Amino acid sequence: MLFRAGKLTNSIQIYRKIGSGLVTSAFYETLFQVVAQHAHVVCLLTAFVAAEWVGRAKWNTLAVRVAPIMVRWLVYTLLFWLLMCFS
Image (cartoon, rainbow, N blue to C red; front, side, top):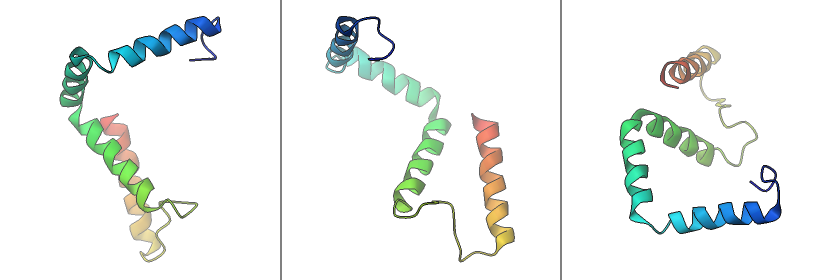
């Protein structure tokens, strides 16, 4: 937001609005409504964050060397099509 605002004072006002919105109940009601409407996207996002967290020590999180290459490509292709269908 610092780069999009024309002036530093504008970006400070935006941050103030965000900060004050976090303490209101209307923000959380709207947030829960959006999460309920897009539950499948939230589940996929949670799965991807969990996969990244598990493989955080590796450069490539999806590099699973114990599975045969055909199984790995099947899983990669399945993940790709899940993304295409649900996003």
